[in-house]
Image (tube, rainbow, N blue to C red; front, top):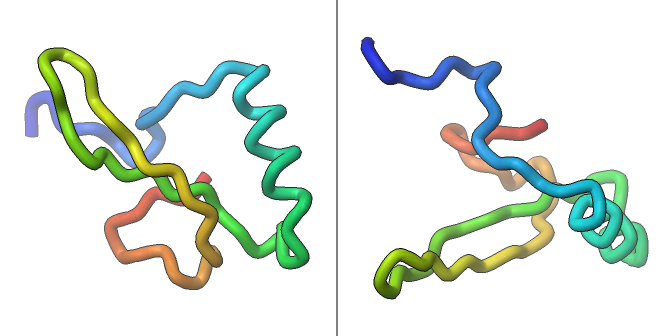
Length: 68
């Protein structure tokens, strides 16, 4: 299928500084090793998207979710 992403294609790029912040916040959780960052697009205004970021247990990830 033309234009389709493979499972190896990155779906999100995170800066080193943002990754450090995410890991610092996650590491404060008692079950940090079992958590994944969930990102959902919650809206759009003009050319800007709004997002919701939540830590979820990896076991709660959906079938279509990408875990990296």
